[in-house]
Length: 177
Image 1: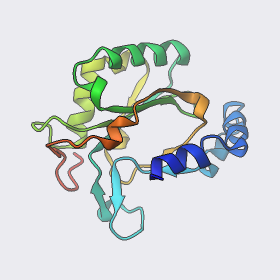
Image 2: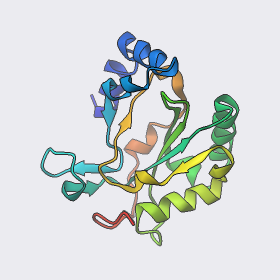
Image 3: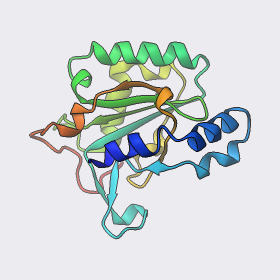
């Protein structure tokens, strides 16, 4: 099995994860750090999650915080992705976060955009993400983790993105600014 299959089968369906997410949404924000997490944009070269030890993965993570209408925003974002010439082929996942935000992960494929920040800003502008809530720029750090949530929080999933071979890897080693 692949790492994603393991995550999907072993974590996203866990009752304990679901209960933790429900508790976070009920106000127990301190439980967030007890959720399983993944680092989408960086891979450690030492086994430690330090920015200096991370290599880019070719994935870009978008976080949108403080989303007033999470259901409507998630559905609108999904529709925009489905109808976008590039992102319809490169977005891997869109899901709501335990704190009622939106997270999207996509493969960086535009060769002229050589940093995470440039890829994020391009995506923000292409999909008009600022309409949904606060665009979180902290995810340009290669060591930034993403807390996982339940399978029910996934609005869009394109597992083929993990299998696709892309000709370009535009993000320069360690380039985050």
